[in-house]
Length: 292
Image (cartoon, rainbow, N blue to C red; front, side):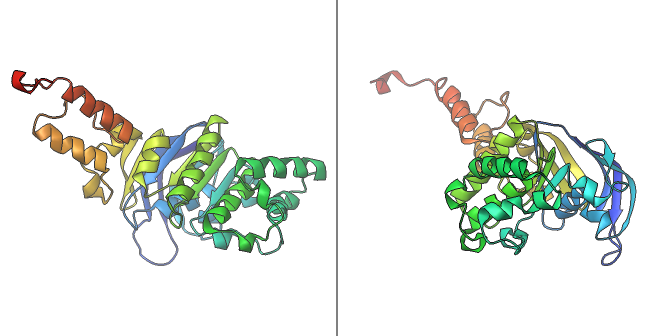
């Protein structure tokens, strides 16, 4: 679980205004929480706080509290937090250690630092390679992988540590559509295993399919927090510098002309849009002369 209670954070240098303001939110085990917002809204800072990078490494002043797996982030050493929470950044190249020569060795690097027994380490690495689809590339250099493969390697390196919480900061920003879908396929599998997933993501279509909860940040504060369909269907999204989804826009315009049942929630996926329009067209009377 991730739990923020009235949390405010200000970096030690730079702008004097808080980067996060009065954040109160909860992410439960076995769920995916998507965080969206305009550039500078506080998404990266939120990821840094949950992982302990802030305030442990960046410094800064804060009030309120943040707990991960029941432990206060600010009062727990980074070495202890690393056993519960893993962080994946948006640039996969920067996450490669540079200290190992193959994919298999790179996946074991974090476990070596935790002094995990060799047999346990070998077992975990083999399973993780299968989970992220890198088994056939086990002996290849991490620097010979594509961007999508490197991002899956970065995720695998975190998964090998068996964290209860995984935080991903724009993990698909440098990936194509297929690479992005594969990353979210991994996140779906993690959810099924009971992992709490917090993902900062600009591709709303991916969140619409996978996320259980979406939080909108605006100028460091929570502008909206709720079920995915409710938040991504909110007409205020453009005011917050987000979206909107094309399916939601189409349905809203159709409703203006009586071509969408306004008692139905606005759609956020192709499937929900198709179902809604299908129901409407079945109720539209066809003139007798036009009958087949």
